[in-house]
Image (cartoon, rainbow, N blue to C red; front, side, top):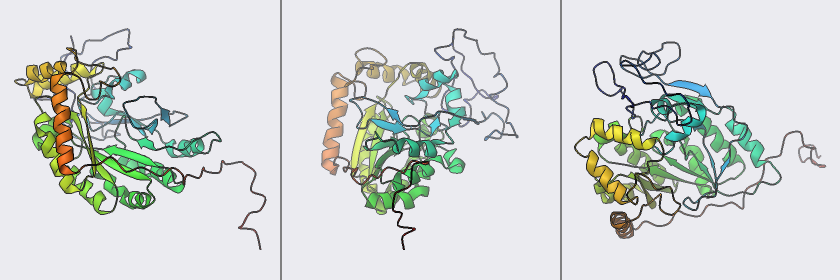
Length: 376
């Protein structure tokens, strides 16, 4: 049985969303956690941990040595066929994150490991430029930070996302962003310039307006009100912005659907969407553990309504159903969203410009016969 991990005072670990660290699903050997965490968990490391203080789980950074950075997909459920994720794992710690199971490919847990053992791709900007320079590359909007937030806390000092945006801007490549972080304001100069060339739009993910709920549900993401302030600032600078009510959690956050859409529209959001809570693989147990710890009186109703939207199961992976669900309750959520979006004047995201793209000149190639810099 999976053991939940807590601090020395018996409370959930400070600043962390998951309450457990289950073994990766590909591991043949499973180890039962001891009564007390096993060393890497609670004691701060003054020589490299990013977190200090009693009862805190330190964040450890690692290097991802991937040799390519553009990931392709053929999913009919998303409006893009390529994406870049500068980071693996996400320190925001959103307990519901659908990307948590990807940490199993690293031999790590989708639980606390996912939010405390972060891997970054230091060569991502250079690798991206190399891939854009390939002769067969065809330009289309690229989604930045889809699996894990490109503006999570470690970005503040690593700056990988900004360097990627600089590459895309230099070669007029369109890009879309989804984030929960006000750190995106740091790159407003780049984003506003790209927006003038119709190369970018940004969506802010807002799950709840309840600050206390957000503190446990998505503990290191920017507070909801502050996200809306960042949205307003980008909109004021001419960047097309939208809101994603995601995930929509039955009996927990779905009552806020209209309020979130209204507040975001007032802040300047022009387009909107929503995604029903998804619980693939280990996320199911992690989310149920969170409910038992933080919302025990609502747990059974949340799961019952979610299963009503998933054909009686905790999760439905089928294309066309996994994002919005099926059944009467899912249809009601869909109708509520459509009515609110129409009333508030939301529109589809603006089209991005791909025709201006000019591929980088690959290094080592023969120079042009006539170089304007040397003519005279």
